[in-house]
Length: 255
Length: 255
Image (cartoon, rainbow over all chains, first blue to last red; front, side):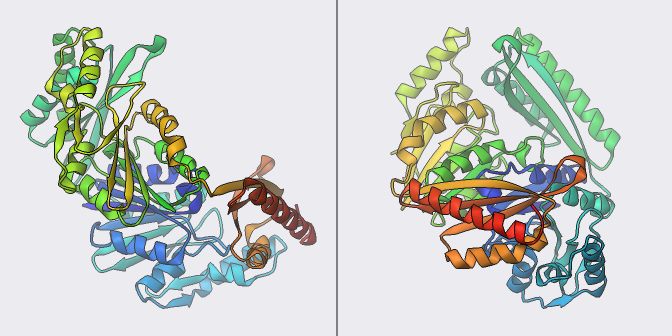
């Protein structure tokens, strides 16, 4: 099944913030058995957020978004999502009370900005925020399951832990392993990689990443991954292919 | 003017690689005067790369892509781009000779995989690769300028340096500055931020990021940015607004 990631925030677009959230979500989705199909980042603008969700729905069975759930004027993910899909917002009393007592326990009054975080698209399920105020939201549009999570990494991460079991695809296990080949050039290994990929006919995926090792020596990281209905089967395939790559590296007199 | 970033690679989608390239390109574009409008990541699949470029063209005056220029079977950005826009690929003799002598100086033969990197969409301009083999490509489709750069960070970075002058918008200067307010809650400052933004009527942008300071104290990073035809004017506006935020923080008894 395909999964898409939508990250929301000007700070990501202009490179002030490196998008580590997308990487964390991507890892979770990949090892839950999904093919991660798109990562899209849009600005803090109502129409752009709406268009972001719209462009990914239908492409993916699951969308995980991150960002724009806080109290400030430019936190507008929930309202933009609701408006785009014409879902009314309703005040969730449970969430309202949690946010209110959290604010009051710190000597703050409940405000319009805090109340906003308790406005939830009708028909959504809440994902509890164990770290901050704004809850996450689970909503289904058509055949697409949508998780709307916060952008603050600690809050997002705590919610990923809460959803990891329900999001997992039961019949799909990825296994991957990397080897480091010293003094091997990507272009020299490339035809061997192609031949091995063809031999295994789509059951394994091999990707190489040129790196610099110590003393500026050229190194090649070769990553082999496989997906199947049993983890043991994926592991076995990967180990087998890694042996073939090592043999190829020896054959070309390197590695 | 709007700018879009397209990053290509399964390793980014599944979170093996954190997308620092997008952040570096985003910073360059932002400080060159652009509104960075989308970052999109697509898999190493011909149709998806084509669709990625297609979906951004018309949205942005400039697209910078990164990834998929190397010699392996899954480096297919140039051919996917060319196929999507029906541009024939031609062997660039200058590039071919550079790649050939580079390979031979290291004791390798010219191969099909290395030759692939010299196939350039007709009508493109080459961006020299001062670090690796595959050149970058500049091509115009309709009203959109497209820079196709490698994914290896050192190679990409060296090309950004080569294009920074030509990409810069002459009449546009961003300035930004951040302050750290200790013990300030985002929701408490939010109405002041909104009021200041309204007062300046779109000439400044204020964004707050909740952080943890030492001893777990709540802190708020407040970032103020402005864009105008003169750097000095942007700087003056930002300094003025930062003073207003400090005053607001004092008024609410924090900061």
